[in-house]
Image (tube, rainbow, N blue to C red; front, side, top):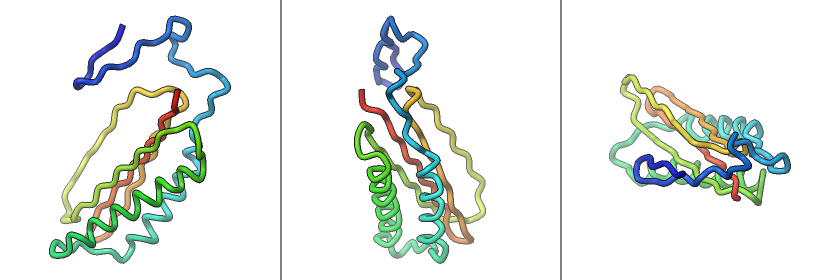
Length: 134
C-alpha cells in the first residue's frame, strides 16, 4: 500500500521490513562530521557580509558558493551511496521573528543537517540532506 502526500507517492514498505529499519550493513551519513564544517563555513564566509538589495548578484553568490562547498564536502565525506541536496536561504535581518519546521520520511540511514547564521544585517540558513540510495 502506498500513501499520497502533496502529490508524491511513498514507496510501499516491504513485508519483511515493516519496522522501517535499514539493513545492518547500510551505514548512516556521518552528519556529526558535516555539521561543524557548515558552522565554520557560514561564520568565515558571512561574518562581515551585509544585505545589499542593489547587488542581487552578490547576494546570490553567497548562497551559490556555500551550497556548492557544502555539497562538495558531503561528497568528500561519503563519495558513494547517497544523493545530496543542499538548500540555502539568505534574508535581510530587519529584526523580524521567524520559524521554520521540517517533516521528513526517512530511512535510518538518511540525514538532514541544518545550520543558521545571523548578524546585524543578514539571516542565512543552510540545510543539507543525505538520502541513501537503494
